[in-house]
Image (cartoon, one colour):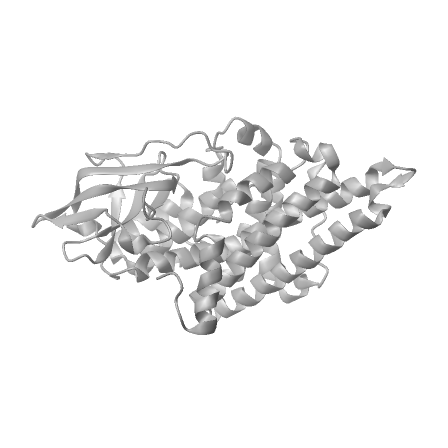
Length: 392
């Protein structure tokens, strides 16, 4: 199946809501995915290897920190452009989008938002080009949805801090040059700090045996009396507001990204249903197949409109974390359901790597859990409705 045949669904003419710049950014990313990701991703996924050579290309394309100001190496784009980049990257693979999401929202964003001018100038331009790779340390072996209970600590030693603890499920950890790590200080206040590769006592073992995000690197971060210079502390934020604001930015990108995965599965299923003949006619002519396709298109359309409106609000500085949470939860759920249903449209062929459904489905099983689980996002919306937090 030739990638050039990709026909993105746009039933409600969402393209008409986009500026010329948005379309240029989207189409450039789409072309790059067709050229650099699609031809190789099944092979890398099968052998559980991250295509590291793509990092430089992502940097050259402006996929890292697109909304970061140009004075720090970013592209001065708006949030809809950022969303469209994530959409096209995830059409290629969730692991590729995860790489860009972590680099942008979980590493560059906190340095830009909470770092010193010296930190911004030291790290952001090189993160933007992909010369440096970043990771984000919040989740711990025993604390995921409840980051406030983290055990990782920094102890003030006068002219430096000592960092002890461990983080888990960290994208890019084994290849990262820079890590944004969240730890509690002597007063129990959560602080952000920059950990650099090569610091004595810092190790990053890789997590193996994954059946999801196989073309992405996942690992741990282990800290044993790591000396952290005081100039590596992010001074602009204290408490959980810091890491949660990063997660809100990443969740926004996910809300867009997973639409790309859903669109990829839908397009492949439509094409197959028009070409595969059973009982004397294309399978797309049968009612139950049309039901699957019609429901998928409906959910993609709703997700597109939800993401576009959220992007507009974010551009205007009006979006709330709860709105981002709703979009992340809804769009990941519909993408996962669409991947499963579109696999059924293809019958047995849907389980092969000739088609993207199983890979997307396996990836989305992670995406529905990370950056806030599906159930916790439901409770965030529930708290907005009732004014009562059910998860505390």
